[in-house]
Image (cartoon, rainbow, N blue to C red; front, top):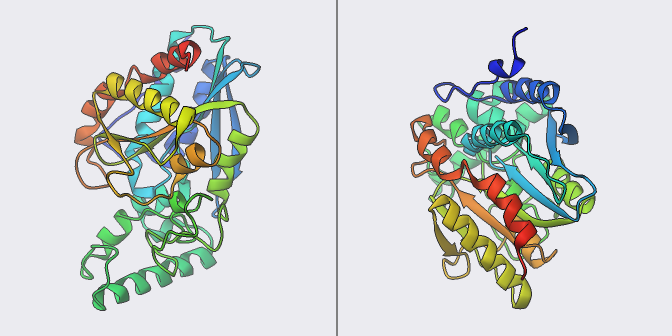
Length: 322
């Protein structure tokens, strides 16, 4: 009988879509009994926000990994899925740790970036997206900063879409630095923080996973870098633990560390939230070197840097004595 695992391949020469990811996740579930597949939430356009669970659910140490919270950064979904397959194939029991992976946190945003607004099924959402586009280009004409897409290239505008289907930049929707963050005052392809913190179902899905489990560290995959962002303004033991995690991830990937404080980056985001509000060590891994969407020609280098991270991370959280 043919081994179904042979059907799970990752072709970096074509778009890795939500539909392909869903197919592969169900195939993983059928092939690997030590993996569980949950739905952490549902996007505005009705797509499941999948949560993959690997390991001992009764373990004291849980790890949260999320990818593609920004639509145009979908190369990180391909990375997370290939990491997942490699991790599952090791078939090593992990009694002391449990992983929770959200391989595509923003499925609507990824779909918009890959296929344009016409791939959004709900008419009200499609109309909202067109209003976002008009306002963004009106802002360009007025000389305001924001999207850098020329008005003559609407296709490029959609390819560079970061937000969800409501025009909310999900990484600015967390309740950390939300009040101070300015961004745009209207729904946009990027930099709109939403009507209130955690207003979006995608952010709620991440928060739900953390709230239901004893998470000891989080990893957020973004593009591009390659760099490891840490140092979000924490102090004391939390900062020391975060520095240790950043040192570890930097050593494994070969990426340089960079302080978000010293870089004067916006103090609002998923990792900021977990470090500052929940006191959970967290880092952001920026993969790739070009403009987003990252060319699939870069995938081999991204994979090479990250392929050993998950098994080593499991060992790290069990051995860390800080």
